[in-house]
Length: 175
Image (tube, rainbow, N blue to C red; front, side, top):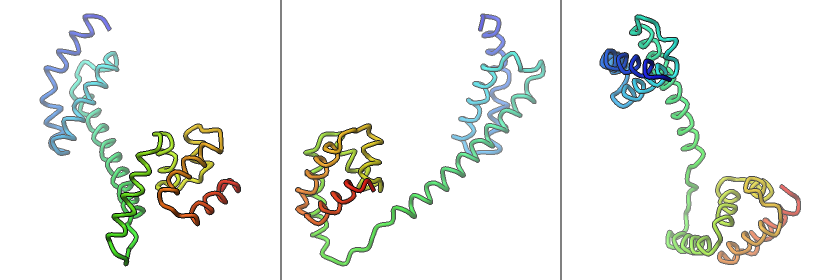
């Protein structure tokens, strides 16, 4: 862009910013309106050659589409949040809460002793539901020993031989 384009944009912005913001404020909350207005002028900057001589209707059309995009995004975000909340429900626990606190402290201590890549591997398996093979693949780990050693440290801290055997079975079957 040359100086003429820059000057044209600055004039366009100065002349129409308030009107575009007012349009957006009538249709959305303050933050969304400000964001949409910023997006309008970003589009105008990128497509300055397409902005007509009477730019206000064009700018308001861009604002309308920006606000519609925000509403669609917000709807998708809200739906995803609802699905995540449903999927992250806490299981009920009838035992002594002190047992849970103690076990949690042991697990967190064991996780702190692991290397960052091993912690992430275990989180992918235990918290995100990936198989050991999937977690190793997502972290670009190639050696099965990487998976086994990280898991062994955590399971040792928990002292749960049964879980270790189940994990070993999963690892050998790839599932």
